[in-house]
Amino acid sequence: MSATPNNNQRFASVDALRGLSVAAMLLVNNPGDWGYVYAPLEHAAWHGCTPTDLIFPFFLFIVGVSIALAFGARIDAQAPQAPMARTVLVRSLRIIALGLALHALSWWLMSKPEFRIPGVLQRIGICFAFTGLVAIYLKQRLQLLLLAALLAGYAALLTWGGSLDKIGNIASRWDAALFGRFAYEWAANTGIGHDPEGLVSTLGALATSLLGLQAGHFLRRGQLQNLLMLGLLSAGGGLLWAEFLPLNKQLWTSSFVLWTGGLGALTLALAHHLIDKSGAPAIGRSFGVNAIAAYAGAWMCTVVLEGFGLMAPLYANGFAWLLPLVGPFGQSLAFALAFVAVWALIVDQMDRRKIYIKV
Image (cartoon, rainbow, N blue to C red; front, side, top):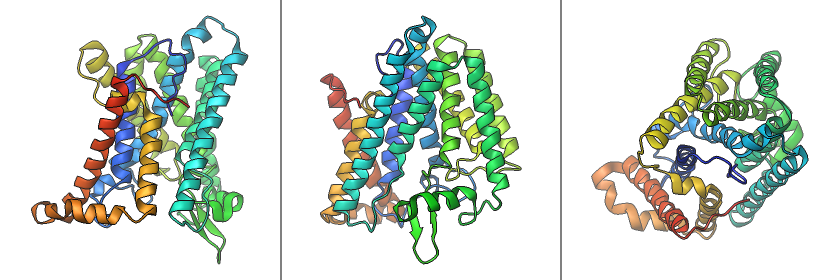
């Protein structure tokens, strides 16, 4: 999940934002009781955008930023393109393979009805490969044209496809035809399926990573006014576009790309000022430099606990005392916070011992 091979430039702010994104993923993915989750910690049911809906776009935005930092100096120096492209493709395939392996573990230990093909790591791998190759082979002007074409083309595809509801939208129809029972949701009797990390909606995710790539160019060149302008124009444009094409994380609509990418750019600018310029602590950095270990390790931890029937007793016996104090929602959140805290200790110790797991 880390997108910084052979770092030429390293910003603590970028590591911190990557790490906070991963920590937030662990938080929202591991409540004590899915029946009691505070609204901001849940995804929007369909249209809309909650704080939780910002997490994955922020991570993919940082993937684009990291690619600019990792390869920018070599690209400027006109280093051979083929070795860089090979690095990108090999790493992306490893990320995808890890995602499939984690899904296989989940399918096996948790007795899921079907093995799921799409997923978070699979989408990250695809975006990493695409954005890395774009960075290596296309000049920035062509990158911007490609970004605009992706946004406009995907919006046109969704609009041309008819309904934007969960069942009738073109992304779900195509993903159902492509993945069938191997998607996140599948109804055999109707042939209707849906996957929030499906292949079609990955078109929007690719645009998010390309937007992050532009932010990374501005960051590494010290063009902070351009970074702020990118954030303001993108976020504002996303809100305006949402009047015609709703914000939707599961479809990853073009308006959603601009809104979340704009907020990502503004957050990056703020973090750069506070951490890199003013010396504020890089909270989340330990997660950021070991993102792969935290995400994959937490996934395996959850699957093992659930698969062997240990999660429910752990929650019931370890957190029951909180129920009269904070209620069921607070109790559920306390478990999620404790889960994140355990992994924060793990990655902190890994960082102290200079243990960094890369893909």
